[in-house]
Image 1 (tube, one colour):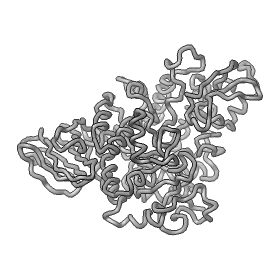
Image 2 (cartoon, one colour):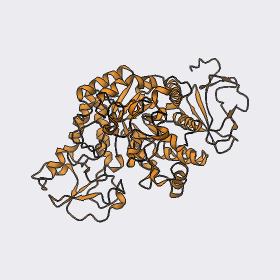
Image 3 (cartoon, one colour):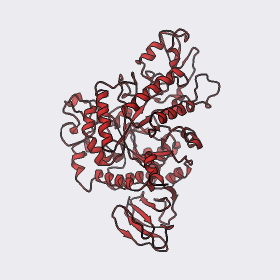
Image 4 (cartoon, one colour):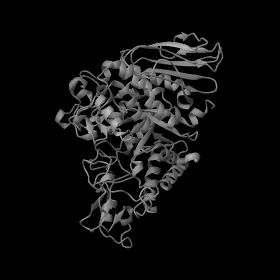
Amino acid sequence: MRITDTSDLWWKSAVVYCLDIETFLDADGDGIGDIEGLTRRIDYLAELGITCLWLMPFYPSPDRDDGYDITDYLGVDERLGDVGRVVELLRLAHDRGIRVIADLVVNHTSDQHPWFKASRKEKDPAKNPYRDYYIWRSDEPGDTSDEVVFPDQEDSIWEKDDKTGEWYLHHFYKHQPDLNLDHPEVVDELLRAIGFWLQVGFDGFRVDGVPFFGQSGEKEGRDDLVDPHVFMRTLREFISRRHGDAITLGEVNLPHEEQLAFFGGEDGNEFHMQFDFIGMQATYLSMARADARPLVKALKARPELHVANQWATFLRNHDELTLDKLTEKERQEVFEAFGPEPEMQVYDRGLKRRLPPMLGGDPRRVRMAYSLLFSLPGTPTLYFGEEIGMGEDLAAEGRMAVRTPMQWSDTKNGGFSSAAPSKLVQAVVGDGYGPEHVNVMSQLHDPDSLLSWIRRLIEIRRACPELGWGELEILEHDAGHAVLAHRLSLEDSAIVALHNLASDPVTVTVDCGGFGADARVVDLITHEVLDLTSGGVESALDGYGVRWLRVRPAGDLAVP
């Protein structure tokens, strides 16, 4: 690897930050966050150190699914602003060194989209060009309750249309009919929208709901299936042609073998990045057990990727914290540790909680968890409010529990909006994680705050290409299963990270060799220069303690 490669494949060294415009900052006082409000906070994000901003849907929508039910791929929700505001936002973000990607929702539209309305007017595709924009069937579909995404909301992936007497496919809500991604006119329309937003200035897209594009091969004999890989290769080729260094980041919660196929296998010609759902779930199991082995197993099971591909690591996102890839016994372990009450769980497969409340508000444990996130091989992704330790609103329905307004100060509505609380798009978190206890202003200049800790981790991450590019090795040690020791190595340097997942202190000795007996070892957090012995480096870790060590040859200028 050459240092110039880190700009060519910028996503491998990025720090991604996800937010919903409508809950970030309200500039006009109507109770809804807007593009102008986000624009005013770009310098906050730049100072935090993030390098890629991911915007949740901002398109026109009936807002029955928090904006993921889209009625116009070429527009902006008028509550948030307009295209002119988007252009200003993008120019400012780029000036501050931040790339911006948009949510791309191509699995489905709203049932209020003009395409779907037109598709219902006539069921004969020869007479109605919009009929095949969606997937229809004339025969009774039978029981498909095991295929729905939201089992507490829907009992079938098919809904009968009273107007035409046929059923349309919807993997999500019935008001979100699935698009036919095998239909050339649909693909052309979507590529036109993608080209538009690339021209406006976006740097890529986070692609929503990929496993539900209509996977082929799972249910032979069904005529409603399409091959999603044909669409993904078309999408990747188009984006690369229009904007050479734009990226696609896939929400692909599938087994590793299928994820590898969505990367494009050895060719690497589909997704640039995919979220590591398996690693995320193993992380929570490891934290629940205070045992690193589930995470180690998940990391070792990752398939080898094309050099241009990358895993996106995360601890939290805007959806439920899904645990669907764990066994039933493992899932119950995580439930018992981090969400034992029924109101904390959702869909019988996940949690509707943010990280700090799950960890009992223990600052040592919270810091350890984020240290682990930033030290793992891949590209770390933060969900807004994680950097200050926001909590959830368990009174909110389902996934909305973690989609509460950003908490800027201890003033009215947490500084999010000047509107009356009853006018807010979403209620502000209360109790011990409310704005009076958790907010940006109280942490901004506190060197011991979580915000300062996250800023430090991002600073180290950006200065050390080993973390995005290095080869992973799990290090042997005799300190017990609670300690994860791993190394990420390049030709001329390595990062060794130590994490104690248990509350008891421990001393661990690890091999930092490979660079000579007189190699230079520096603690990246304390800046202490450590002694390297024939046995390696000995480190004392407090309960939930962490250590980041950078190893370079003697005489090499180590910055940091």
